[in-house]
Every structure is written in C-alpha cells, then in structure tokens.
Image (cartoon, rainbow, N blue to C red; front, top):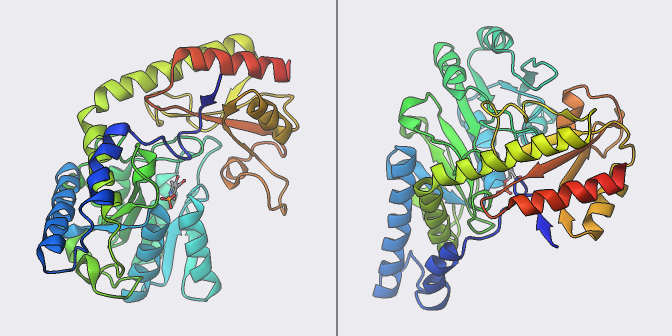
Length: 376
Ligand code: PLP
C-alpha cells in the first residue's frame, strides 16, 4: 500500500484543476501582456482568476497579485514593507515558517531592524499581553504572525492580533499559506495589511502563490522587470498556474464543509486509534485540539522514538510518507525550530501526519499498524 500523509508539505493536484489548466498549457499560449487577440484572451482569463480569488477573500481584485508562492510573497512583503515605510522594529514568533523567520533575520543581520519575539507557552499559544507590550514599546512596528502553523497546526487569533496592531499603528502581515483554502478568510473583517498564500497547499499546482496587499498600504515590488502585475511583480505570468490556483481555491471553498468534515473525522479517528495503541503518546502544540488547530495536521511524539530518521525510513520502505522533526540540542542545524521553541526535551522524536480529502480510514489503519511494528 502507498500512503501519502504529508499534505502540509504539499497536496496532490485535483484533476479538475489540471483540466482547467490544460488549455492554457496547450492552446492558449499568448503572453498576457501582448495586445493582440492571443494576448488579450489570456489576459482576460488571468483577470477572471484574480476576481475569483478577490471575491473569496472579500477584497478588491486590484489588491491581489500572483507570485511564485508563499516564500516569494513573504519575502516581498517583509523586505519591502519594512524598507519603504522606514520601519526599524519587527515582531514575530519563533514558530513562523523559515520564509518569514529567515527573511526577518536577514534584515536584522543587515542592521535594518531590531527583531522581537512574542512570548508563547509550551503548546505554542501566543501570549497576546507580551505582543501588546512589544507593540506599545516599539512604534510603529512590522508584525508578521502566521494564521496557522505548518508543523503543529495551531491557529492564531488573527482578529485579535489585527486589533492590537490597529491600536498601535503597526503593519500586520500574516502568512496564511496553511489556512488558505481550509478555513474562511474574510479580509474585509480583519485588520490585516497583507497575506501570503500558496496553491500547492490546497490541491493546486506548485510554483504559484498569491499576495494580498491592502490598497492603502502599497509597497514597491521585489522583482523589477516588465511591469507585470500592475508593477508589483515583474516577469511573464505563470498563466496556467494562475488559472490552476483560482480553480483550486474555488473548489476548496465550494467543497469546504465536506472536506473539513472528512479531515476532522480522519484526525479524530487517528487520535483515537493512536491513543489506544500507544498509552504514552503526546500530541504537540494544539494539534489534538480539534477546535484550535488545522484539521489536516497532527503532530505526535512517542517516548522511545530516539532515532527519528530510522523510523521515517522504516515507514518509507513500507510505502508511507509522513514528515519528521525533532527538538534538537541547541547548536545543531538539524531538527525542528518549532519543536525547539516549544521546549520539548532534546532529541524528542516527532512525526507530523497531515491529511487531505483523498486520504481514507484504511490508510490510517495501515499507517498505525506499520508504526506499531516499527516502535513496539
Ligand atoms: N509558509 C508556510 C506556513 C508554509 O507551510 C510554506 C510551505 O511549506 C511556505 C510558507 C512556503 O510556501 P511555498 O512552498 O509556496 O514557497
């Protein structure tokens, strides 16, 4: 049996998305910047895709830009919102994705910003009092706090964070790569100035993402070129990718309830079965808290897993793809910075199991059976 349980890393393309993209790979090959008919028809498809995305997020199409993915969007916003606004303080958390953390650390190293971290507890819950203090001390600040964490699934309360940022005139960017396509996001109701999204996390193609920037918070582009994306991102558009992103997002929200019920049921089932089999299992972060974490992510540690690589290898040879991670002794380059930040005992092995709408209960049974053989 081949079982893919690494959907927080990337998801398989939905065939309907592929069908929507196909004409833009095979027939409609015009460059959207060309003014002849081949170009014009592709341009209108790109603008329809932008409108689809904008409607889902409840923003204006002019506030949506297509990029190569979450990494590019986070880099664009972090580097250029900070630079163009003359901001000298940035606030983030230790469990952000490296696309955020490393971009901020780069600016810190260059002497452009002082970097501050919001305190959090051992389950990765942000201490909003600590955020408030940082915001009051460092005005105006750039804040980058993700909507949902890719390793432990924790949701952050972006509504409340947005309010705190508004009160303290901070620029609020949120990496929504893991939550977009999985939970409702109405940006008209949130004080968020920019977000990052990525199609391959919701059954779209890889290498295409989106950037929302509030119309009142314009920033310069990172990639300078032919003035594409209304001068916000130079480079000929990844047309098929854009069509695929919009189709995948449309499907994700049209079918959200059914998908979420399925994921919730799978997660519940997995927790139940694992807890039955391994009495000393621990779930990391809020990943076993069904209300406050992504339904697709479950992070677990089982005492006695001291060689995580061997366990992953063992599962892999049985056809099972999951993700690993460990809290590493400080100073080593391997391991998970997220689990480290939760202060898990050093070398605690962890597995991240992440589900999609395509997974079944039989696959979970198979995974648990092989996990038990490997550990017990
Ligand atoms: N942010 C988060 C939270 C992610 O999980 C990822 C991908 O794993 C990224 C950013 C990077 O996105 P991309 O792969 O589109 O560059």
